Image 1: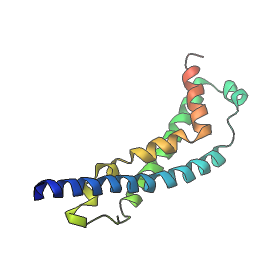
Image 2: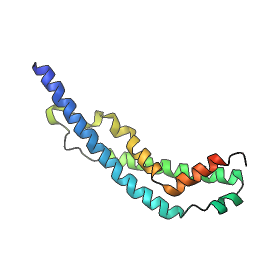
Image 3: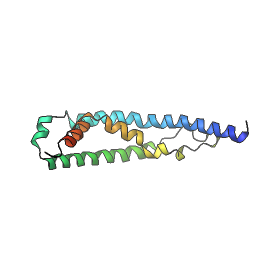
Length: 130
C-alpha cells in the first residue's frame, strides 16, 4: 500500500469519527431544546385549533418556524466553536467537514422531536382548506 493511499485511509477514518462527534454535538442540544420547546408550547389541543381561523393557524406556524430558525442559528454557531479532539491529527481539518456547518442533524432531531410543533404543523396541513 502506498503512503498516499495509507494517508487517505487514515484521514477518511478520522473524518468518520469526527462526523460521529459532530452528530453528538448536535443531537444532545436538539433533544434538550425540543423538550424545552414542548414545555413552552404545552400540549397540542385539537379543539382549540379548530376554533382558530386558517390565517391565525398560519401566523402561529410562521412564528414557531421563526423561533426554531433563530434557535438553529444560535446552536449552529455555538457548535462550530466547540473544538474537535480529531482536529490536526494527520493533517485533518475539523472545520472542513460539511456536517459541522450544515447542522442537518440538529434540524432534523430538533423539529421531529417537538411533539406540539409537529402536531400543530400536521393539523395545519390537514386543514388548509377549512
